[in-house]
Image 1 (cartoon, rainbow, N blue to C red):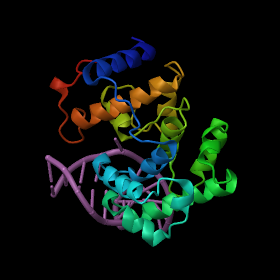
Image 2: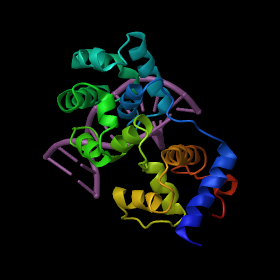
Image 3: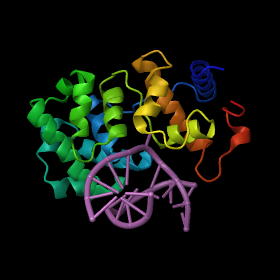
Amino acid sequence: MTTRRRLQDIYDRLFEHFGPQRWWPAESAFEVMVGAVLTQNTNWRNVTVAIDRLREGDFLRFERLAALAEAELAEMIRPSGYFNVKARRLLNLLRMIGELYDGEPERMLTDEIETARARLLAVTGIGEETADSILLYAGNQPVFVVDAYTYRICSRHQLIDEECDYRRLQEVFMDNLPRDAALFNEYHALLVMAGKHYCKKKTPLCERCPLWEV
DNA sequence: GTCCGGAGCA
DNA sequence: TGCTCGGGAC
């Protein structure tokens, strides 16, 4: 079976099982960007608490958030964990957008993909997964997001070997699927669901998994 | 105690 | 390559 067909098969089974995920849960592109940083190695439930706090203070807008002091921001996002580093990372991101895109996130999201990606990666605290999450889920750009679940699932299903770096795994998906942002959006979200509910780290539930025998 | 839509540092 | 950041859910 070709990689192309296997990836399609995996998608079909996950979609059949979990249904449409409709990511990213947010009211604006800016909110997606904030959430992408806050959810780094963090349960999404905790992130929603921090996001809601920011929303209460009307801080889910560039000018308002950029005006916050780091310590003040850190205190607001405390429930998301790593609050000190994340406050710094958020302000680093906003500083870049302020300097290179005149403080307009939309300009970055409609910029050339590789240009925007490189600039995001140059921000201390924005790695490949966070950068791609922003491009796909905030910018609706056809970029496939790779995360720990993607690694685990692809590894256990022998689609990749151990030392496969981020870009390589990303290519597996991008070279074997239609380059469609809506598809990449759903696919990544479905992999997260599969990883969360079945392809668990210590005790995978293989026999009940929708990808059993794939 | 374990894990979470990671990333930077030595 | 390990260590650190960290609160909340289970």
